[in-house]
Structure formats: C-alpha cells, structure tokens
Image 1 (cartoon, rainbow, N blue to C red):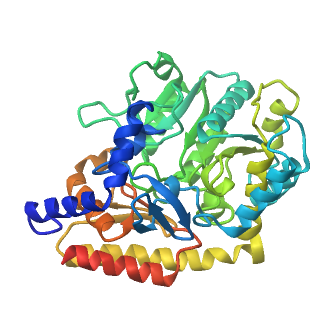
Image 2: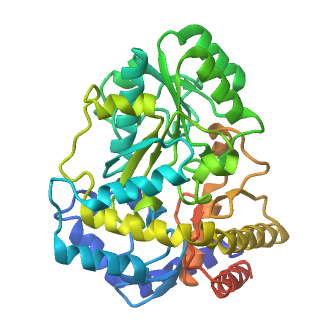
Image 3: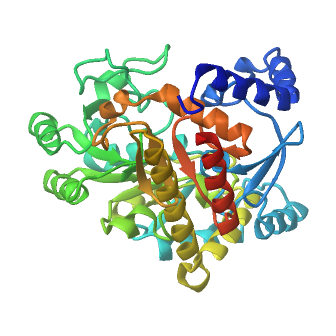
Length: 443
C-alpha cells in the first residue's frame, strides 16, 4: 500500500473529499439531467468522483473549489501545447469574429491540408472529420472499397473508437478466453463485430500469418496503434511494424496506422517519423487540433482518389470547420517552428519524468513498469514489461488507483488508466514539483 496502511489511504481520500466538495455537489446535480453525470463514459472511472474544472493555463488546471493541479491528463491527450496556449486562443478569437462555420469552402481547409501533406510521410491527400471514431470509419470504408474485401484485422487491446464495427476486443476480461475471439464491449452492439473483424494479439507474428492464411482473401486492412497507447503504451517489438508492412503489401491489404494519439505527439511526423514505417493510410485526432475537435485521414493518392472522385462517400456538416482549422493551423505553426525544435525539450523532460517515477517506485519496493515514449507513457504495477494486452491483466490496479488519489491530494492530476501525457508547457520546475510530490506520497 502506497501510504503504508489502509487507514492512511482512507485518510488521503477523506482529505481530498474535503478539498473537492464543489465537484461532488456538481456531479450529483449533473446526474439528474446528464446520463451518468459525464459526457464520456470513461470519465466515470475517476476516483473518488469526476472533478469539475473552471480553467486551465499552461501545464496546470484549476477545479471549482479553487485547487490547482499540474496536469498530466491533458484532456486525454489533445493538449500538446498545454491549457489555453495564447497562439491558439488568438487564432480562435480572430476566426470567431469572421464566422463560426460556413458549410462551404474557405482558405483554412487547403492551408492546413498543405501543411499536413508536407509533414506526414504517407499523406498525398487528406480529408477532415470531427472525431477519431469518425475518421477511422472513413479509413476502413476506403480500404474495403479499394480491395473489394469485407474484413479487417485488428489487435486485442487496441482502441479505434466506439463505433460497433471497431469496439470489439478492446479490454476483454481475464475470463474472455480464448484470445483471438471477437469480444463486443458494449450492450447493444450488433453482429458486425463478429462478422467483419479478425482479432490477433499484439506482437504475435504467427497469429497474423495464420489470419492471412485463413482469411487473406477477405482482409481489406490491418489497423493498429503503432504504439499501443490505449493499453499500457506497449511498443511493437523490433521488426513487428516492418513485418506488418510486408505482409499487408504481399497480400494486397492496406496498412492503417491509428495515429489519433501518436500523431504530432511522438514527434512532428508522429509514429511514422519515429519508427520509420510508412502505412497506406493514417488517422489523426487529439493533438492535431490542439484541444479542438478535429480529425483527419491522410493517405496515398491511389487510395484517397476514391474519396476525391466520390466513389467513397465522405460527408459531415461540420467537417473542415473554420474555428477548428484555425486552431489546427496555429498548433502546427508552433510545432513545426524551426523544424520541430520544440520536441527536444518535450522529449528531455518526459524522459526525466519517466525515469524519476520508475526509480522512486522501485526504490520504495514496488514492482513497476513505465512503458512508452517520453511524451506519452504508462505506469503499471507489474513484475515485467507487457508485450500484449492480456499481460496487463496481472497489474496491481488497486495500488495504482491509490497512487493516483494520493497524487491528486498533492496537486498532481493524472489519468486513472495509467497513461501520462506531457505538453510543451511543462517546464523543468513542473517535473521537479511532480517528483517531489511522489516523494511525499511514498513517505
């Protein structure tokens, strides 16, 4: 137990509850009119209850009771430049004075597209939507249209949105055996998850080979998070991404990278730039909008032309919204300045935070794995690194939950699922303060 005894953990929770009475009152009120009291189901996992915030600035966020936290949740990842960066706020203000949306063309659409095609290795053309879930559906529709095949291959533990077709085998339980059988996640899902998807475990070459041997004539695409951010930030083993590139090419299937998290976070060119593998298509959301709802599909011309000529339908009233694209342009301008120089400090500080967390927990006697990259990583109370989703089922999630609660009581906000994000707004002083908070928690 992080605080030494159960009583001390309970004291932490009581202390935190005293500080956040305003959030509790609002949560109870919101449940009377808002389903579940939250706008995304994952937010209900916050302990002891979801916090309500009033404002944020840089690397910090302030709740309705006036408590300020160093923010490593960053709205579940989008805030690559931190809370309310002035460049984005000014771009939004200027565009809002010109118009909120047009349902027609404007200069920002091609200006942002031109930047994306210069930055993203696989991008000959792009198209826009509003969420990661939407843009994944565009990618899979495009893959089916190009190949004439109905199925796609996804990996257990990878998250590609909440549409019925992809919300399958995301976080199956220990009793959902055998691995490889499609496991729907939500009540009310139809039969498509069973009919259209082939499930394989992450880093399992022989499993991918068997899938293509059995279903290769039906598989239109392989989709994956190149770094498994949604489940432990488990990296691809050496050569595995290269293997996926080779086997999809050999079998006439498309390789799709879900870069909703990794895009513009692992570097200016995302996972493609960091790992040196170029997929056929890639999906983006989160950091690309700097905090506003934007998603994009980037791909090779031979595939994207099916959208360009209308063969594949792609629609949406708010696609290419000018306020959102103004924010994206401002975000890209900051990130691309001086050939992405801002990433050097992001990497350095993230690496120091990663190693500091790991060394402190191990010195305190805990088995811990800190996996991922400096700008997004995962903390697990595990005895050895995970190579697939099901390895995470061994993790001591209760101890991690106590750790998160104690950090909140010390003024550090992190996500309940183990992920830590950092932004360009985090300074060395923020890292120092966070490591000092961890020292106090462990004492």
